[in-house]
Image (cartoon, rainbow, N blue to C red; front, side):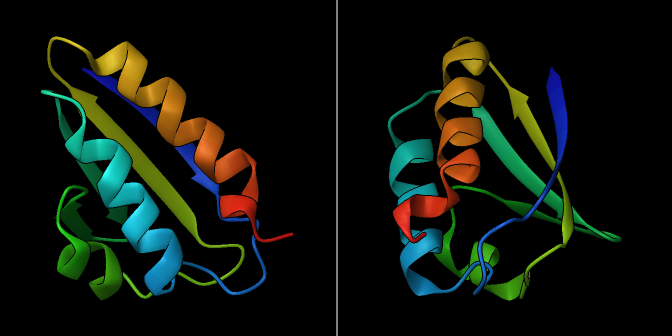
Length: 88
């Protein structure tokens, strides 16, 4: 199991477009993927779950990867967050 804590950097936070990109990438992998904000932990492969986080700019998120291809999943998800979902 791999964990990474990040601070959300894009201006608009996780709205529909970033949520769909997260889910699209996560769905390509066999590993489980979870996002934890405060005390809420959601399945990162569920667009409803990702949207439910209501994560705004500067939110601290814990990303949790668990499974056979967790390292590759982590790399792609972290890259997506670091590139601010291609929005800025």
